[in-house]
Image (cartoon, rainbow, N blue to C red):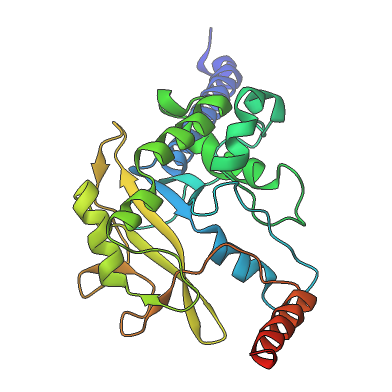
Length: 274
């Protein structure tokens, strides 16, 4: 067989080999990007204070209303967020594994109290669906979170074990619509119980800062650890203005206007009849 007759076969082989190598390379490239994008270093467990969530939800929105847990002094779960050090995310690691209410039906009553959706005008499962679709699908890479029931059950367990209500109450930091607290006292209250600094998040409304969230962090073995990559001010991990007081508001909704007027009338009547 002459060399000339082999040329078409050689060209065909080279084209096939190049195509195969390119396909393998692209597969590895996509696989590598996917792995990097979905990898994470630690978990942020976030609790929020429903009273402050309500402040933000209803601010300048008269048609917005709030739902509270039955225990009016109870912090609730916002989420468990897998996080890559020095950045945010990953997010939405499996867009085909969407939240299914049937998966959490056995613990739904507990979730309503522990993982409360304060924003009444949102859809029934809005908060839980958001947290699972965005964060839970990424947490699912490790066994304790590799299912919707596991993910939400672990949130309930974390809340019971690291309840901010208990930590703050022990330091005599209690909700008030009059008395302010401060970031240093909040930090010390948590550190005294778990030995790690919390991330203290405030929300700002009309020049007032309200205590919104407290976050603590865990490694992949679910050991407590220092939260990484957070803004630090004078040794505190916070977005709050540490030179100003922080309101830790009660969770009672504001009284109806007619009740306020009735209260004023009763006070006036008592004074008038003295």
